[in-house]
Structure formats: structure tokens, C-alpha cells
Length: 339
Image (tube, rainbow, N blue to C red; front, side, top):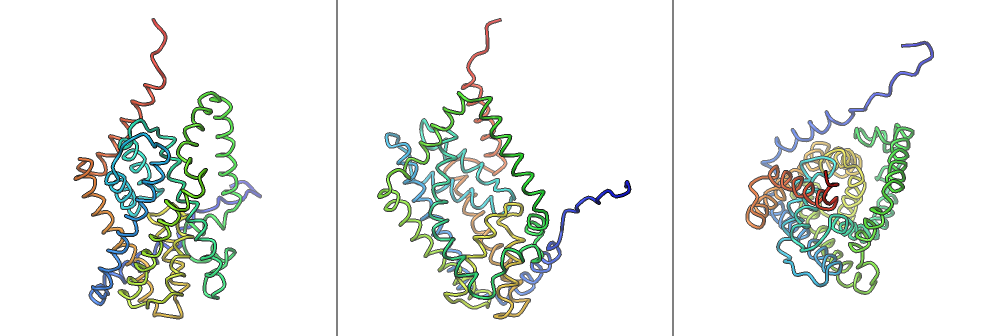
């Protein structure tokens, strides 16, 4: 290395050993997990996803009011995508969701379907902000400057290397601007389709009635699921604990580098519940609740793929999605010039 040169910044792997230890704690203590609360929690979580899929169905009906499509297919796509996201990093399940929904809604487009998925983010943000304010006032929730010291390798990398993170975001922004300049006509058509997917946001009363209130009902069911799982793993269900878990999930959802934000969730839960339960109990819960939710959602999602869409594996649906998107791209480009 040349004199005066800075050594390369290593990619932090802190937290991987802790995750492995937590997985071991979960399996070693599985016999002590309370089965009834566990099953109640899993049923509530699937019900929560079902309610959210209904709100998403309303979003799609607003975007395509003249088309006829079934809620069962939207539900199947929603459940399958969530189950896949819990085992594959970088939200790979969203690709499955876009394809399955696109083929379920006649004359729909990929930009509109993709945009429609962000309508839920308006509700999620309206809930996450007050929940995070509550969490930060409880004295046990880490403050953002301390995120890099929690031991989660994805959080450590982002907060320990802010210059790298800013550089990557800047490069992405510049690339998008260049693409927009080069493809201005296609970009206009693209944004018109994006607006179609977000059309329900232009009718505030309908959005509040058919999306926000439905998602809020699902949110209450999700809190019930967290309460039951806290009881199942002997951490203890309470309003405070449930809201803290929700705050942890809100932060973990911003880190797509691991399936379901596993490393972030585990690091936060060990820190947040250190005073209310033993380290082994918290470690078992921190990954245990994620494992059982992932397995349950993956199983239900796979059944939905087979029974509703006729696919026999997640690999098969990904291949079909790539083929379908390639065919659409070729069709939009039109025939080439005559020889």
C-alpha cells in the first residue's frame, strides 16, 4: 500500500455470530415455547396480511375501475410475495408480487402496478412516525447515532460509512436523471402509468375509507399477533412491548440487505428487552418469531402459488415473470426497420 494511502473500509460482519447464536437459542429452547399463543400469533399474522391485501385490492380497483379481477388472486400474490421476502434479501418477493398482480389485472401495466404498491406506504408512515416517537421516549430504544454500535452488520455499514452511502445514493439519482433525459418521451408515458397506480390518493375520502381504515384494522390485528408471540416466547405481552416491537420492525423494514431485516431486528430486540427478560430468552424470541412467521407465510404463499396461479415453485414463477416482461418489452418496442 502506498504511503499515506487510506486502508480500504472493510465490510462489517458484526452481528452474524450473534444471529447464529440466537438461532441456536431458539432451537434449543423450542420445547419451552407456549404452543397456543404461538398458533394464535401466526393465525393473526396471516389474517393481518389478508386484511392488507384487501386494502391493496381497493387501490387496484381505483386504478382500473373498468376491469374485472378477483381479490383471491391479489391475496395470493400478496401472501406469496411476503413469504418470499422473509427468506430472500433485497425484497425479491416484490418482483413476484408485481408479476402475479400484473397478470391478474387485465390491461394493466408494470409501472402502474409497481406504483400502486407504494400507496400503503402513506399509511405505514402515518403509523410509524408516532410509534417511533413513542419508542424513542421509553429510554430503552437506541438513538440513531448509536445504530452503528448495535452489532447489526447492515446498520453498522450504513451508519459507519455515511460517505459511501451518500455516494451510492448520488450515483443512483444521477443515473435516473440521465435516463429521464435520454428517454423523455418514454418517460412521459411511464409517469402517466405511475400516476394511474396512485390515483386513489387523489380521492382523500375514498383513500381514507377503503385503504387507510382497512390497513388500520390490519394494524390492530398485527399488534395482537406480536402480543401473542411475546407471550409464546416468555418475553411478556404488554401494550408497551408490542409498540416497541412495532418500532423495531419499522426500522428493520428500511434495511433490505437481509431477509426481513433479520440482523437489525435481532440487534434491536436484544438491546430493547435486555431489562425485561434474560438474554437467552430475548435472543430466542428475536429470531424465533421471525422464523415461525417466515415459515408460516412461506407455506401459505406456496399453497397460493400452486392452487391459485398454477405454479409449482417460486423459481418457476420468477422465470415466467422474466419471460413475460421480456415479451412485453419487445412488443412495446415494435417491429424493427425493414431489411
